[in-house]
Each structure stands twice: as C-alpha cells, then as structure tokens.
Image (tube, rainbow, N blue to C red):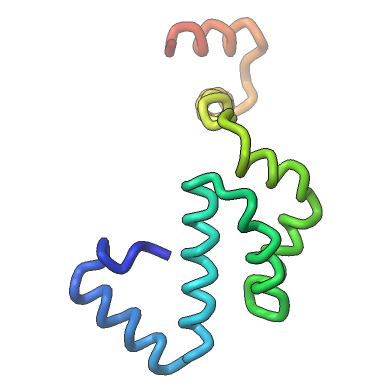
Length: 117
C-alpha cells in the first residue's frame, strides 16, 4: 500500500514482479491505495464508489466489515476528531497491567499508572 515514490528500487522491482505474476493484484493495490488516501484526506464522499468497486474482489470481506458499521466509518472520514490519543493511553494501561501478571490490586495499578505519567 505504500506510495510508489517511497519504495526503494529493490522494493519497486519486487512489486512489479508480483504484479507480473498476478495481474489482478495491480487492481487490488490500486483499491488499497485509494482507500488509504480516502482515509488520510478524509474524503467520505468517495466511500460509496470505493465500496462498489471492491465488490467481488479480495477486499470484499474488509469492505463488508466497513458496511456493518457504515455510520461510524462515515463519521471517521468526515469529522475532525480522532480517538488515537485515547487508544494510545488504553494500550499503555494494558501494557502496565500485563507486566503485573494479574498479581496486584487496583491501588498498585493506580500507583504504577500515575508514576509512569
């Protein structure tokens, strides 16, 4: 899915060799890059066309997952807010909990979280 300009010469040769052996892969790569650009540029208006384009392709399962929660996907592509910082804090908390191996109670967990901050 990386931009072709960001690939070094060896990676570009590898991608071209893959596409030469499987021409349908070229279309899948294009669809994946289109989705990536749609997300990065927050282009919710292109979502319906993209979902129609991936029907019957290897990305149909992924698109089906998006359709199941289409309202949230549209909101993510059109609203300026992100849950990224919250997700990062949740991951940090889970990491701390895993290192404790379930042996400590809430007070020790609270102390470790506040100490780490």
